Amino acid sequence: MTTRKRRPSGEASREHILSIALQLFREKGFDGTTMRDIAAAAGLSLGAAYYWFPSKEAIVLAYYARQQDAHAEASRGALETLPDLRSRLGAVMHAKIDMLKDDRKLLRAILRSTLGADEPTSVFSAETSDVRRKAIGIFVDAIGKDDAIPEDARPLLGQALWALHLGLLLYFVNDASEDQVKTRVLVDGSLDLICKLAPLLASPMLGPMRAEITALFENAGLFAAKK
Amino acid sequence: MTTRKRRPSGEASREHILSIALQLFREKGFDGTTMRDIAAAAGLSLGAAYYWFPSKEAIVLAYYARQQDAHAEASRGALETLPDLRSRLGAVMHAKIDMLKDDRKLLRAILRSTLGADEPTSVFSAETSDVRRKAIGIFVDAIGKDDAIPEDARPLLGQALWALHLGLLLYFVNDASEDQVKTRVLVDGSLDLICKLAPLLASPMLGPMRAEITALFENAGLFAAKK
DNA sequence: GTCTATATCCGGATAGAC
DNA sequence: GTCTATCCGGATATAGAC
Image (cartoon, rainbow over all chains, first blue to last red; front, side):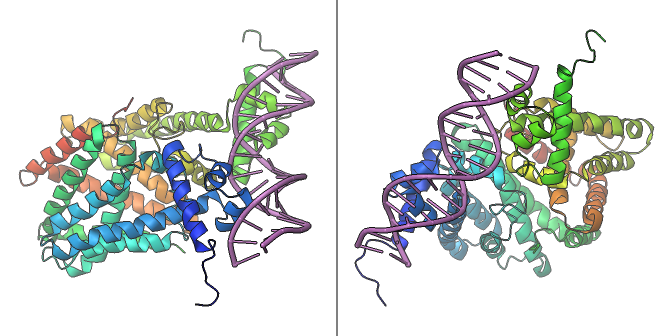
């Protein structure tokens, strides 16, 4: 509302660079794309690219945020309408895979820096805590008010599902099968198992074991923000 | 024993470079150590270092092989003498963690390239298949002839334990607790759970689920050599 | 505040001379 | 086998145009 006019520049450049960069990443991979490539393809100088993104990694962080919002959007309908836990979880998982299916090469390249908590682009880093919190939230929402899941177990199960989803994505990006069918089978199989096991853990026979599992996770502070 | 004399050159340079490089990696991390640093500290030129190791990554591969052999050696005694499954598994896991406890910074840096199957240094790559096969073998040996584990389930359980051990190492390298106590607790807790659950899966109540799990893993070809 | 142009540093990797 | 010279690309710095 201040001096914002028809000037072509501004935040628009940032979006433009991001789009071009992601496109190049998809075509040539992360390492195969240079900042000089990105700047040239966007019709800007190298300096301008660095003006908007302090590093190549920063572009990846922006990509995370964009995908996370897209996933939340894509899941919203399913979360509101689907009546049972199993179908909600399936919808959420498959929505994510659908969304990422053309980005497997890029994701493999990014994988190089996704697991050390001190790497900014790590799924465990402080820089990605916001995205991580939102991602876990989708799974907690998917559990919803399901009767089979005890209320105090829901946050933990949400985090466990998020962890499972990371493992499935790892399989997915390396999946050489046609259209990654194997990943789809693995997703459905894992979810079936979980939805059968979850109520069992509430049964008297396995009750003590549930306490043991809970204690184990909580002692380890697993998936809790580390910083 | 052949023509190995006072000549400084030959295969000895390779071992020398490897030792120096690992020492620098431990002190300054992987990225913090340049090939020029390594060459200089080894008293050689940059070109000579590249003559023995085609890349910085290649040094990491040599490190894997060395650690794998050390772990097998450290586990041998326990595997031969300990009478029960639980203590053998504990010995193997803790031996590995003991071995790596001064390399956490290095391992975090290496983590950047450990999960994409097309990265040479990935735990799933063709280049590391030999190390991987040996590592899984240690767990299969640890299961041994335990009566509670059905014979046809042993190879699968061996692979599952290897996968668990990867997850535990991931936790370990990011573990900020004093002397990584949390990792130790997590190791013991996981193994306790597994040793309690394993026989349950053979019970009539959960029998069908065991078939489901087996089918799931085999369909996915999980942990099978991909290439 | 947005951008160009250019020069420079740094480190992984390669080529070719000896 | 070992060296020096060189390339390449990420990243920084600077000076200035609008």
